[in-house]
Image 1 (cartoon, rainbow, N blue to C red):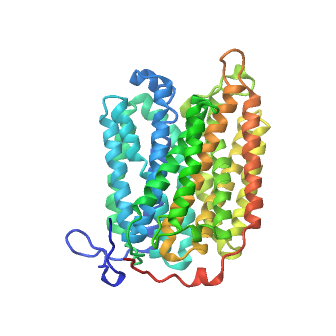
Image 2: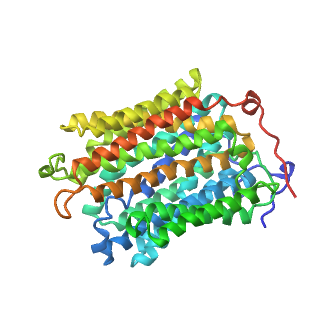
Image 3: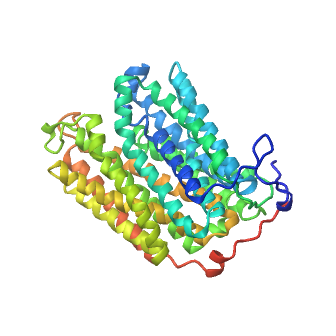
Amino acid sequence: MFRARRPHQQPESTHPGGTAPAPPRPGVAITVLASCGLLVSLVQTMVVPLLPRFPELLDVSGSTASWLITANLVAGAVSAPVLGRLGDMFGKRRMLLVALGLVGVGSLLGALAPGIELLLVARVLQGAAFGVIALGMSLTRDVLPADRVGSGVGLMSSSLGFGGAIGLPITGVVAQFAGWRWLFAGAAVLGVLQILLVRRLVAESRLRTGGRFDVPGAFGVGGALVCLLLAISKGDDWGWTSATVLGLFAGTVVLVTATAWYELRVPAPLVDLRVSARPAVLLTNLASVLVGFAMFAGFVLATQILQAPVSTGYGFGLSLVVAGLVLLPMGGSMVVFSSASARLSRLRGPRTTLVVGTLLLGAGNFAFAAMPSTVPLLMAASTVAAVGAALAYSAIPLTIMRAVPESETAAANSLNTLARQLGTSSCTAVVAAVTATYVLGDGGPPSATAYTISFVAAGAAGLLATVLVLLTPAPKAETVAAPAPATAHG
């Protein structure tokens, strides 16, 4: 078991040499934490454009190559709540460095991997990137002045979108002219650079919850997430009514029930269900699932439409690099509107920002569903959806942090990160099923109907998220204003 020292015994954060780093300017800390989002985006998207080529490059089947996505997704889902809880117990900056170290090691292993086996191990290690964002956002609340928290969270959220947008052209250029291994090598270099920057320029949070680490809870939550995400991500390949997929869904229900029963009876649970069940937290997490679904549709499908042959009737026949460049405004708009999101949240509250964001996200996806006939129209639709995603993604962590005690921000943000990831995973599964059903000819590319159905589903998810946000009560004033005292259990 892990045991934390009592809060009054926690030392100041120091470097190995024993010298505490000078407190950095808030703007510097915000920039460093936000830059972590670029690394996370690169790690999550670096293999997506290359999936059609990996079977030939690695001499494996397409189904085997798809595990490069699934392994990263499942490992990230399991590591995020564990890193979040350990961050609340032992220091968020410390666990952020651990997560960045795992990403760096995984990236280096990927660059050197001789075959699919070690490459899958590399993608599992890179899954620690899922914990980077939640820990970084929680640190903004602990180490930044109150008036800078909103802008810090907004910039970090938008960096995910911007990183995803620039990741496509970068992946295309590097893979075409240097080889795919250099993508992993570049991620390893960025991981080391991020470790150095965080160590030097980001202070450690002094807040600790203490207590024992909930090992049974970690196994229960991890097992439930593995079953659920495997069923969602591989359901189309294995068959939604197959014994394996149905068994995974049944296992999810059993593990969730047993773990919830256990978590309600331990003094320091991995997931505090009493806090998570508060309407402000529960409804925000449910809305986050829908936001993740609505956002990911544009990210995944826009580049496919741009690269689809003109003969399909809807495609534009662009190369991977050019398609990525066309979508750069989407990422740029997310950065620009992150500051607007912070100002709006400061003036009207994050719930208002979240309502505006989900409405724009729904509108952008419905505009996509009309299958824009020109590149400028497609860019306009993608930009509207991106602005909505920027506003929503920036406001969600603020909404969560206002509804939970300060001592549980990392764990709460990790759970919310999982909610968004469930949304993106569900979007991937739905899109895969729809595009496999509606095709042109026998085994041809997806039809326009497939994209229309996918975008209508994403638009509906955005509007349903709006309804949930409007139903979400404002957090109690004492929760926001008065952080819960740190305690040590056991």
